[in-house]
Figure 1 (cartoon, protein in one colour):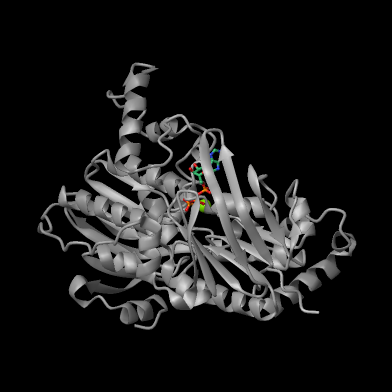
Figure 2 (cartoon, protein in one colour):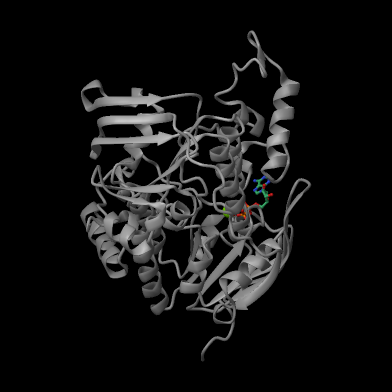
Length: 492
Ligand SMILES: Nc1ncnc2c1ncn2[C@@H]1O[C@H](COP(=O)(O)OP(=O)(O)OP(=O)(O)O)[C@@H](O)[C@H]1O
Ligand SMILES: [Mg+2]
């Protein structure tokens, strides 16, 4: 008999954290063998809902059903036993360990964990091959690219025989090529009958990949749609509650002073390298760096922000920065924040000696809290709690805080790496406006992004980084996705 119950069903689910209602009356269902998209603004409650399905939180009300049975999970182990697997918004891998050990870590005591190591490796290689998630299992996770780390996470849940896969913003950190590969692999998993729930802010991806989609807003589901019966504009409006506007073209001219100059820079960490590159940014100019991740972007950013990260012998060339530098690093959780400390401490980071905030050794707490509050207000960081620990904010709201910290100091030079990673489309529009404002105020901006759309929307010119060299330059008047894409792949 064919079972007619949905693979997953949320019925009136709610969840509160103290006085913060993260989910309220969430209702939707997912048919087996389909891909279900979950979209919504930052803080709308998407991750919270999925964490309940994965047994990490208990609902405060309502019920979740898995294949028709109540999912009464006390922990993620119960969820895994029910063949549910989840890849989190921030990967949870142990970096110094190999990929293989990371995969085995969670399976202590299982039949699989008792096999000889060689057999474990062969089995995993086989699963990886079958679904297209090949990786070097013996490599240490810290040496893997973000895309490869994600494949480790997915392989981990596939090796646990998960039938229901939850992916929380899996493409936020991937390159366009990696996204294409991932989607192909997800289609393969679907064809094998697996059920996939995917959270993403990229509405084009929702349209390309999913069968159905649920839209979250402020903790509620405001729409459940068949993907074929909706559109990007439709979804955007449902999410944000208003139509998005087209950005204005620039009104000020590019300045004449050079604010950032890189000359004959050759630098290397591990296998990542840039070779004899140069660039110059004028005040009031935005220069975009396009390229597939791993072609030297991380090295360029490190060289600009932290020369001490390099061995002397691995660094030559000259970098001149004219004025205050504001930056937001690519990976906010690895660099530049204290995840378990309150928002205001994170906001203060880097400006803790500023006379505005400090007198001698003492912090002017009132000023610090006020500045944080104002920044949260301006950037619409939700919830507006200056004392909430950084890692309790949703992913996109964390990003807004990091961007606010950099731009509100009115820097003359801005290094913006992946400025809108993980933020919702309303917030992307806002952050883009803030970057344009910095530019109009005379800042020179170096924009490093894996989103071609973002680069083309903001940059005055785009340089393409390929294998450590700048291989092409496009002025704004000749931006075109296909030519830039070709240069990114080395064909120019
Ligand atoms: N452990 C927690 N303690 C307190 N509040 C929390 C906790 N986890 C989530 N929240 C709050 O619940 C709300 C929903 O958060 P959630 O992470 O589910 O949002 P999201 O839709 O995944 O957002 P994003 O797109 O930014 O990742 C937010 O206001 C968040 O601050
Ligand atoms: Mg989230």
